[in-house]
Length: 184
Image (cartoon, rainbow, N blue to C red; front, top):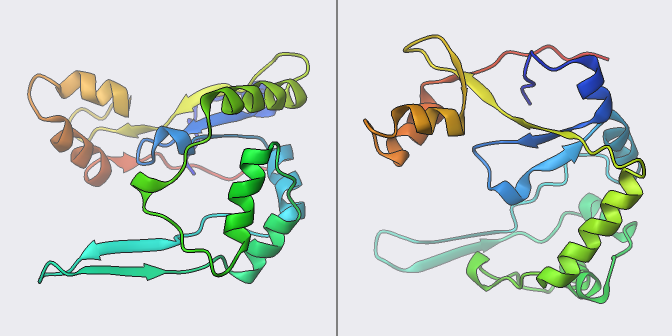
C-alpha cells in the first residue's frame, strides 16, 4: 500500500478509496482505520484466496488446480450474514468444500438491481452524514522526467507515442511506486 504524500490528516480520517491500477476496478475498496480494525474482529488476515488456476500446457492439454477455502477463511465467512438471497446462495457454494468453482467467464454476476440496492444501503449505513471517502489513484514517478503520474495521466501523456500495453508495462516495471511510512 502506497499512500499519496499529498493526503491531509482530514482526508485520512474520512477514509480513502484505493484504486490500484494493477487490479481490476471492481477490486477497489473503501478503507479506513476503523474499517480495518473492525474487519480484524471477524477475519484475522487479508481475505484473498486463489481458488482456481487453469491453463493449457505446451501440448495444449487443459490443466487445472483447485484449492478450497482454507479453514481460517471458512471460519471467517461463517461469521458473515448475506445481504440478500442471491448472496446467500453464492456464499453457501463457497462454504461447501465439494463445490467446484467456475471459470471467471462462467461465474454468475449479481443482478444489477440487487447490487445497486445493496450499495445504497451500505453507503447509508457507513456514511449516515453523506460524507463518502475521497478517491485516490496511485501515482508513480516516471524516471524519464521525475514527475508523479496516475495510470490515466501516464496513458494520456504517452498515448500518441506508445501502445496502451507498452505504457502499462512501463508503469508496472519501470516506474517505482511511491515510498510511504506507516503512521498510527
